[in-house]
Length: 327
Image 1: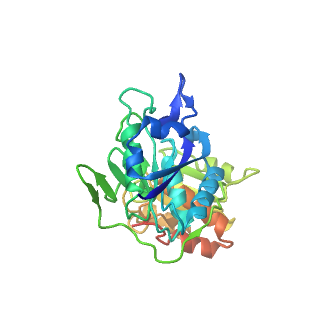
Image 2 (image 1 turned 90 degrees about the vertical axis):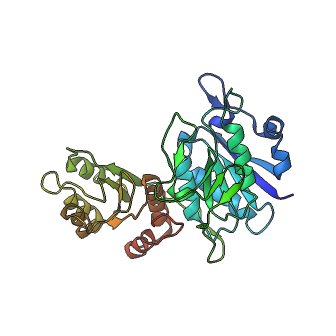
Image 3 (image 1 turned 180 degrees about the vertical axis):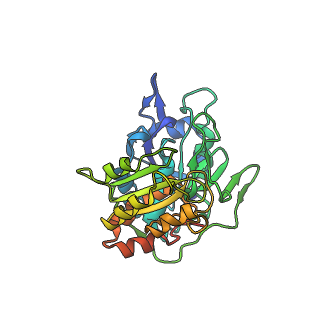
């Protein structure tokens, strides 16, 4: 029987009470979901027990260490129990931090606690453990019968069991009568390397009609300014040009040493050459974010700032398809 390491981070799956708060349930998982014992030999460890709104770069670094310690030895498959609110951020962070991954790292959780009636926790947990025994060497999210690429997943619905989607890329696997694994699984091209460094000084600028550039400038001039900006632009990368132009602010930010990447608010491939109002951002020096959504772009920027000492190497890595995030 294959071995699976289950790392507990907390989240709704193990919560209880009213209002919901983290509970102590990890050692009772097999008791509550006995079919897990027939799928794999489980080792259960607790990394933390937090509402996922409290999870960030410090916890991501702990996870990178936990996964790296097991690389090259049993257990091969890893399941991470995590709250749904920031699960996509954590999945993207691990996808970038665990280069050359040769075994599955599957994040899962639930919209209702394991102890609740009509919970989705049981199915998600069983599916995740079974998928962790398969030959899918990627960081992924398992939810509602689908396995999604971690650096392409977003939380699309806070009140549905179908909580996650991966716009622009098919699921890595579908859990139906059979386990249907996709042909587009990525394979490692080099030796494993875990790097848990993240620089959290990254801000997201979400464009809205009437946004005053002075607000962004004030943020850049603060006592602790961001070292990286993620601009969530309209369409394929457009931003105001005639009035309240953003490009001049982007140019000043880059000249001052701040990295800027542009993503779309709605999905699809960024093209900063298509319109005058997108070309202005490219001319200002912004990096196109490919098909990354805000979650992936934010944590990739955090890693770029932490790992690379100069502007050119950071830009080179931001425009490199590391884990299937750009195309």
